[in-house]
Length: 122
Image (tube, rainbow, N blue to C red; front, side, top):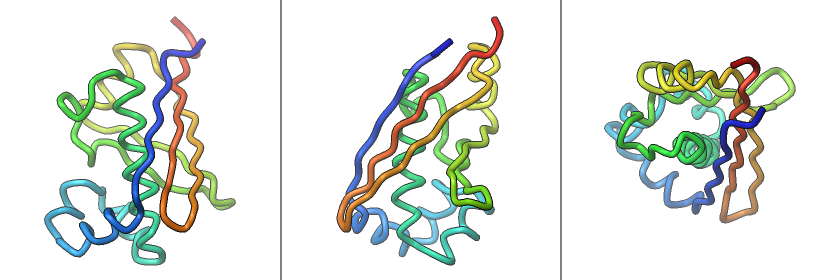
């Protein structure tokens, strides 16, 4: 059953520019994400869009969840997936959200992310 959906679109250059500040990187991205960004800084925008989409899925915005409590990584084939920590993990457990499906698409200037939170059992 679907718990919720979330979507976000962001300008890639805006996030890339913000990543020039170390404080932004550590506030927004986990250590694993920061390692991923070393190979392609444009992924910072993709990950940020996913984080925004996840908090929209929960209906909380970043009031209840810190951005670095949502980790966006890629599997061996490049498929994005989400790991939740802290308040994000607690919120997911409270609502029985066991899986978050992620889709990311981008143009030269924009990136868009779409997530679906799925309840496996109630």
